[in-house]
Amino acid sequence: MPRRLPSWLTPALAGLIFLLTGLALLPWPGLQNDELFFSGPLYAENSAFYQIHPGGTAIPLMVMSYSGALKTWLYAVLLFFFKPGEVSVRLPVLLIGIGTIWMTWEWTRRLAGLRAANVATVLLATDTIFLMTNLFDWGPVALQHVLLMGGLLAFQQWLKTSSNRMLALAFAIWGLGMWDKALLAWPLIGMAVAVVLVFPKEVFRRIRPVPVGIAVAAFLIGAAPLVVYNVARPGETARANAKFTTADLVVKTMALRQTIDGSTLFGYMVHEDTVKMKRKPRSFGERLSVGLADLAGNHRTNWMLPAWLIGFAFSFLLWNSPVFRPLLFLLITTAVAWAQMALTKNTGAASHHVILLWPFPPVFLGMAFSAMADRIPRFGGPALAALVFFLAGENLLTTNHYLSRFIVNGGSGGWTDAVKPLTRTFGRKTASWYGIVDWGYLNAIRMLRPRAAYPAEVPLFIVDVNAENQEFSRQIGSPDFLFIQHTAGNEMFAGINERLRQRAAREGYVEKVEQTIPDRNGRPVFELFRFQKETAP
Image (tube, rainbow, N blue to C red; front, side, top):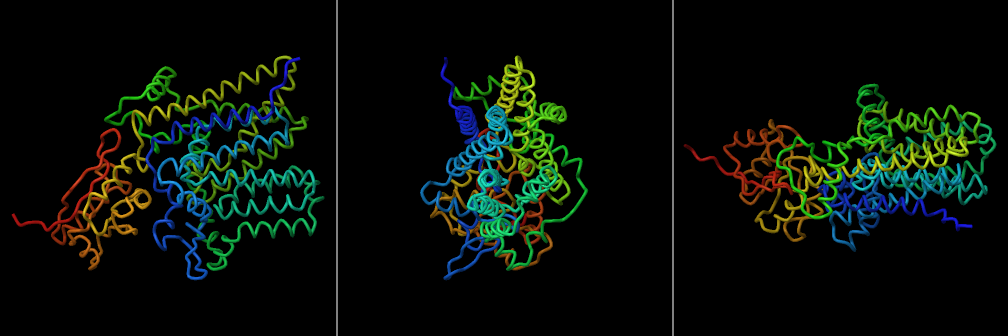
């Protein structure tokens, strides 16, 4: 009798695929401003949104009104030992993503069996947008996913054993996730609504003073920094962010679809094929990726949207199956979580919000597909294997299409790789102050600059064409002040360069460009310049 393969083999291989595809993508786009948002308090004094001062030491608690400094704390340790760069910033969150994959497998296995867990894990690990939002983590989302699933695993263990320690651990982890980013409330509220609707008897049987008290206390302990902030600034997280709107529902629905099918980051993170000055692949790995993309054709999208529709249809056919209630729980959780981001102002229109619904969609598909396969004893297993192999293969081809476009077209917008050569120029320039004209590269400069090149604080230069102040005159009139701006066509805030020129011209100054910084493709992206008095004709 052949020996059975170990049950952990599938999540191990899925995690390996996730790691290898992540490593292939890792070095291509430049470090982006939001990706490095956590690092502000590490390099610029008093840049934290909120901090406390025990014993005179500044300790950041919040980096935004709804985003805490948990990642800042973690990277304060990591970057003490490792040089700041793409690897030290991106590899840790990539590994955190593998932790999410393993926890998803373990949770699904306990909930619906090994086969459902294996299907969910393969679909999650090959999901292009799940990979890229974790790897580049500009949301940030990596800690959100792993803390959500860590709490779910502990909660599941409490349901099984009634261990108060597991209950406390679950809610402490979720509290920590709320501090990391208060948007964890979306899936938590979704789960709360779903569990009451789907498992009402079980819920009311478990609601007792002691477990409720333990859960509340543990949650508040985990979220303590967020609580401290909202006490110091009463309810500011909710007041500043929880604003209802029905605007942009069409855009938000499109963002949901494009996150599902994998196409949402083309044009945002990587240049489209219409861009000029393409780069030819050079190494064997680059030629392999581009050749595979050419052979496979246009794989901007995968087949996950049809898979979702099929899984949704299957869920109705499984109404008398043991997995129907778990499927309904996942469906309601996902729907309620998405409704919250769709009806909140300034949320839900981009992939880094939509991806917070994950890993519930792949788990839903894993359970639905596996349960349907069980109903076809002879052909169900092979048909399921073929379907999962096809969907995972399509996911990987979409991921490779991104990689090939990075190689040929380069990173776009704030993801330009020109930011790295930009920071290398500082040690070769004579300047006592640097003016940042546009958005998108301040955090990278703070992190990557040569340490002795110039003062640690890099002021953000904000152009106000109507301002008549002495500080502006002092900045443009100092010959040792150097300014950095995007080249024409690459501005994040359209027209900001021209507004600066007009403002300076009113005081008789013109720009004198000293250096232009190109990206890997040779396209000019940044300009370094000083102001000088305009000479009379």
